[in-house]
Image 1: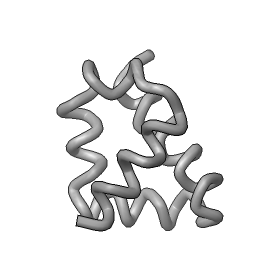
Image 2: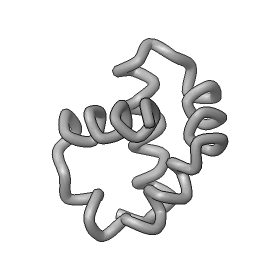
Image 3: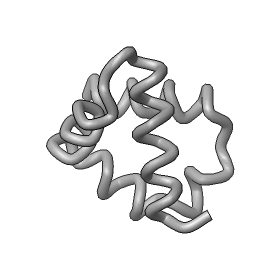
Image 4: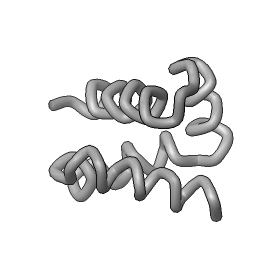
Length: 63
C-alpha cells in the first residue's frame, strides 16, 4: 500500500469511527500534524490493526 493510500485509509476509517465527515477529519489531521506523522511513521503504522490505529489517533489528538 502506498503512503497516499494509507493516509486515505486512515482518514476514511477515522471519519467512520468518529462520525465525522472525511473532509473534517482531513483538516483535523493536518492541523494537528497527524497527517505528516502518519507519513513519517508509515513503516510502523501500516501493519497495525484498525482498532489500534483508531486508539492511536485518539491518543494523538488528545495530546
